[in-house]
Length: 276
Ligand SMILES: C[S@@+](CC[C@H](N)C(=O)[O-])C[C@H]1O[C@@H](n2cnc3c(N)ncnc32)[C@H](O)[C@@H]1O
Image 1 (cartoon, protein in one colour):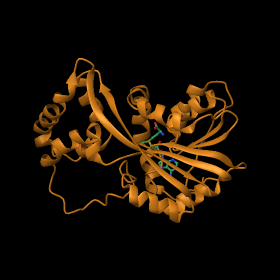
Image 2 (cartoon, protein in one colour):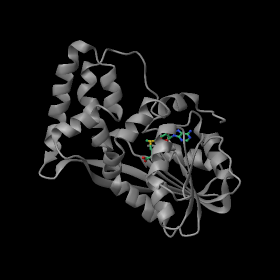
Image 3 (spheres, rainbow, N blue to C red):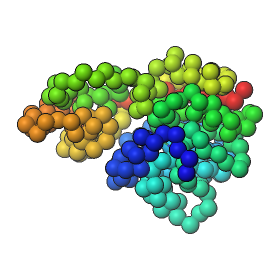
């Protein structure tokens, strides 16, 4: 397999992929409102050739195939792809392949390239987006779900913010555009990337939803410790402060816990761009 994003391959084809497989049902429920927005955005897909970029455990690819599209899902994680294949069962559609979207080639071109949170991990996004455009038909379209800023996504930021004071001081300043969940949160930056990569008719739709993160506080804590920015921060905590940091995170999430579970807001950009 040709790979340009080696560090992402190491990350997703390792423990991160395994964690997403373990949490697949929970994640697909949690992300359901955004999946629905993506499906509505895709419109009538019957008979269309679709590439699902960073398809992970297959949720979007499977849904698009159910609606009559011919779908190829690509991802870096063999474990997530194996899980996607298992979910597909005996059917031939969708196909799932391990590939880096920055260099993936296919024998066919696509009417649509979709991605649910799988496009923000390229080391060099502009050439990757230009390459993806070359996989589209001349009337083809790109449809991306990408997270807006952390402050608009408390479900991903509240936990990490609560434990930040317990982390060892660091001189490292993180580049907000470095590969990661929020790399495509700046509309002006992403619009520029897409335009320079050759796309036309670039549109951003803000979709904000209440997300049921967990059924109760304990489940929310267990989840936050496995996936997302809080989980990465947790791994860097010195042992001596873990208990205190855990209590701080619990106190920060507790106000979101109510009769319907732990409900927190999430905000994405639904980004649409045409080949020409
Ligand atoms: C946040 S997960 C989302 C997975 C899935 N789309 C979902 O919504 O459940 C990001 C996915 O993008 C994949 N990914 C990251 N960089 C990629 C690349 N360069 N080419 C293909 N897939 C990539 C990862 O392996 C991972 O499965």
